[in-house]
Amino acid sequence: MSGKKEKTIKGSVFRWTVFLLILIFINFYQLPYYFSIPGDAKVLSEVIEVEDRYEYDGSLSLTTVRMGRANTVNYVWSLLSSERDLMHESLIRPEGETDQEYNHRQLMMMASSQDTAVLVAYQAAGKEAYFENYGVLVSSFVEGMDAEDKLEPGDRIVEVNGEETLRAEELLDALGEIEIGEDVSLKVERGEETFDVTVTVEPFPEELDPSGERGGIGIAQPVTDRELIRNPDVSIDTQQIGGPSAGLMFSLEIYNQLTEEDITGGAHIAGTGSVDEEGNVGRIGGVKQKVIAADSAGAAVFLVPNENGIEGSNYQLAAETAKNIGTDMAVIGIDTFDEAIEYLEDR
Image (cartoon, rainbow, N blue to C red; front, side):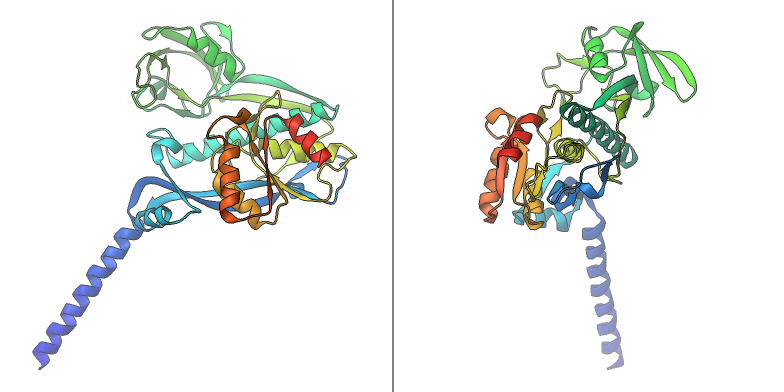
């Protein structure tokens, strides 16, 4: 009897050990996918403060998406859930980019988005605001291309072939004129050091350009290093929220604090969308999750990029999501900052 009991115990221990190992594998083995779920709607008057601001009764909120690396459980859950999405890691960040580099890039994009939003809002409100540009910051690389071996994240590029390039657009324009196979001389600032480096223009990897006709030096998503000069002063504290997608809502909140009229009309207004220096509202990701987040927070209106009405626009996906979840929240497609102001003032 004791022998049978001992075998039973050993068999039970073995089965439990195998079961636990399977659970550990399922939980910790990461697939080459990210999952996204609805985040929250953050009231911007709590994180933005303009000097001598006007107070108002309503609220303007940015909306967020929570993302994470998918294990087996999250992968299957995302396939079955209407609120979750799966994205291959290649759509989220360049191959070889570390977690630290990804987070750094997202925070740089957020900082740039905030500055642009301040500029747009101040100019619309008739206040002083302009940029002093200092160069182009390297944020990440295309793996395997020449820049990866010769530059570092945080380097500031100030010249291309002897020509001053203080904005990301100027850098991209200058590099676009150089043929594949040719060398380009960059003047780079790294901390207190300034030096010249030669980088070769190469074809982009096939996954980025199947035609093989486009080339570059391998800098992904360069960011203009600039200082925003403004009066009155404004402070923005978004902590670890990254990316450019809150630009529209930042600009609306800042404008509302600068002007006497309350554009919210006492309502809770949520939204998403990037904004450029001309006030154009641009496409963003995670629309479905942001609509759900706004509805969960009780927003009356959700502003979303209209993209001039193109098929598959952010607005179309947002409207479809709103219909699917049965919300009474109004979903409004927006193409420009001025259009958003006009809608809010007239509603």
